[in-house]
Image (cartoon, rainbow, N blue to C red):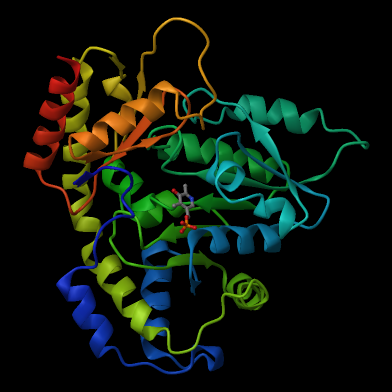
Length: 351
Ligand SMILES: *Cc1c(COP(=O)(O)O)cnc(C)c1O
């Protein structure tokens, strides 16, 4: 199977497995796991923040950050298709008592002018806004990258309205790679940053929340409250250290494979893809359907769902994102040959 469903499907490397087996560990509940401490120190340094905390998942780290920046009854200003809105099981409401203030965008690009209008029009009978959350790269927008100018405009606006800022940087290393900048520059100015060790970096588990020292101290309590405290988790952090140290260097190749895939898909009949939208490791395209109404996205009859079923029969896996949209993601367990084979398989599917 050529698995293009996500960059989370990678197998831990031999180096990771060895590091896990050999890790020096202690009880992280007492702050005594040296491998966890090392991962936290290196993560904070990479992001240019004072401190970092190891979490079991990106969802928990994001929600802990929202918990600390906000309070029940408040709103989280964010792009409408953000992971914190559409893929975290309603945790913003269920765990934090907050609701999104979703801002629609073109292709994941938050427009500071629109944000300004929304914030300026807030009255006394509307929920207060707790923070601005930004996602970079933006998953549902096809791995779109926000550059430094765009980020600076958003940060400036947040400052003007006194809002703290959180960056969902699940794939911030992909953004840094695409921008050819140190990752700390991409994280600069945000009060907190979450990044995943499990996406392109290839670890089996774990995400990091980075920020100021007192923020991270409080985040430890929230992580415990959310059930995410650990003990000899250095065995997991050891894999995370390999991911953090060796993972970023691979991402340019993932991006090259995504470009190769996008170029291959562009000319296939029945597929609607804007190749210029592919800038990191995510490729989202639409499949055309016949006449008539489009079934619901979760229906087995939806064109995207049927397309993915047919893909399975030629040994390729992808996920339907909506009734017509299909997502493919490149990662370290794929080669150029895999991409070429997937493209030629899809070409034959149509003939
Ligand atoms: C993967 C991802 C997360 C975190 O997901 P977990 O599976 O909970 O680790 C958060 N935000 C974005 C944009 C993601 O792609």
